[in-house]
Amino acid sequence: MTHINPDPDPDRTTGLEPGGGVPPGETPPAESSMPEAGPQETNNPPKGWAKGPLTLILVLAVLVAAFFLAYALVLIL
Image: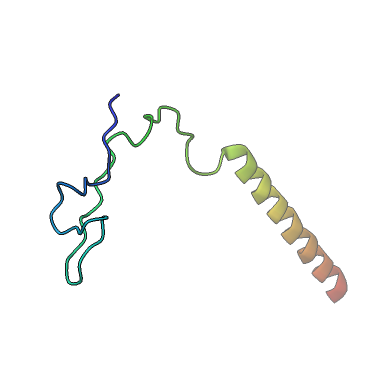
């Protein structure tokens, strides 16, 4: 891989003062993108909930709701 310097060369860039400053009213040069941003991702985990944890959460929610419903019925009767 070759490395490409993303910073502009102040000697060859128009609009830069000696030392790399930008005069008033002048737009500074834009940063270039880095073509070598990183390694290619090959192992991305799936998104979303797995079936096991989601089922466990739903079962617990139903059990809690059933407990409070039974408790309310005991208080009423």
